[in-house]
Image (tube, rainbow, N blue to C red; front, side, top):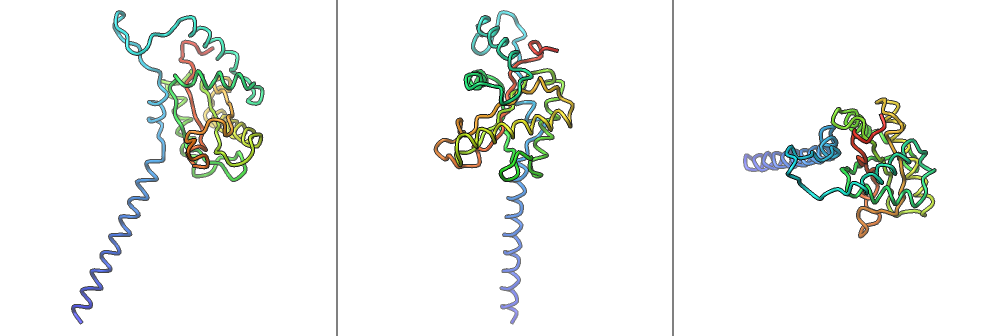
Length: 218
């Protein structure tokens, strides 16, 4: 009898340990997916210029190209999402490649542009980050992306509405200037993981710091 009880107790202990490990893994995974204000600030902060005039780090910037880029950014500030042409959307994507950016896994209610309750903490962290002194005053692109399910027109419209939803939340809740947030939708045209077109990683909102404080019209 004592042996049977001993085995039962051991089995119970092992079961509890297994459950505990599973719960711990789940918590760690959830925490890892929760983006923080600090993480967003660090991702979007422009590269610091070298303190010494004679030293430089990274590629040299063409002043003419930089000026043209700045003029383009000014033309899209304050524009409605759907007013952007295909060429302008592609120009934004080209410029964004070399800018500080971050992908946020923000989910929405099914077939809707309403931000899901579980994603509100990430959107709130974004709002806090964009009002941080290190970022405040910059021009940001908020780009909506979908996975490959559904037609092109449907996904384009959905990505635009979802980008607009993020902008509306940030302006309403955090007082960000609407002109500082350029919203653009790419539908399923720019999958993050083309080899897995239906993967969740493709359903994302990308935030890009397009211009630093010196070029923002404030």
